[in-house]
Length: 404
Image (cartoon, rainbow, N blue to C red; front, side, top):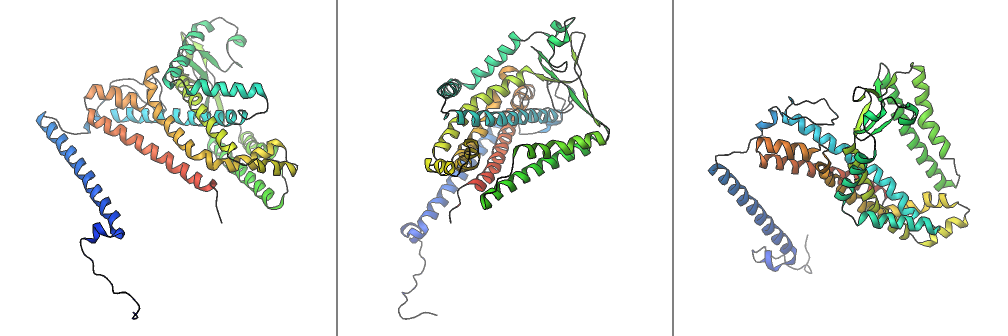
């Protein structure tokens, strides 16, 4: 229902798409979208025309053909008669493995170094500053090559373990450090091992739940529950009890020198270790600066108020400073995780066969399918980057400052 005071409604005219501020932004966005679509359509048609002129076509049938090459370290069964697709999957798993290990290690190094950079101890503070400046100002490729060279030049060959005292050559008679890599015991899963693993996963969930409950109780009532020994008890005691109740369903296969190399156990090649630690210590230096900035963004009054309540410095850092600093730390941390994943493509420099070395390297050279392999590489890195961003953004929304 209208009244005499209501202004008459103006009918829509095409000129309003430019002159009216209500529609102008949508008009420009639509024009930009059409231009982008037209550009990609032109590039795609040009690509297809050039392929037809050269007698080529886009096909992914090569993925089912035998690869004809070996991969030195895989997480799945693979040999030279496996398909290019299986070689690509092995490369993807190798990329995810090194990215996960590097992200975890870089986070630990970054948090420790960032906190210690603000230490009252002059020597500790300067050492952490030296670590940050030394590693973040040298290209990560240089660190990969340095660590790999040190491992191959310093560590002994497997033949050096022959006839030597095992107590002096192998750590705990279970770990062998050689220039071919590190050999560690391999778990052997027997009947009932799945139950033990399930109990351990449930223990992790229980530990997290207990720590959250203790923190919530502290914030609501001020009652401080112990965190250390209850967390360790929840994490290990149920798993150890179930392990012995079921008759030790998990055994270890120890590496042993047979012939010219170690047999048994798990071999972690030097290329994986070099790439893992180089990415971790390089990115950890950037994370340390993010942590330092996040801590310094918290007002000193927060620390003084917590200290006036009688909280110890470690409690102040864990319960007051770091929770507030996370809203500053998390956004750049996402970029650091993405950089680790993308920098893992440098693995080919030390012979670690990731997705770039398999699909974007040997497979591309053998099949000549450059367009197809590059498109698959782009799709993989895009998918994993978007997945990491999505997961970290969920966590960022959970810890960000919530205003009333």
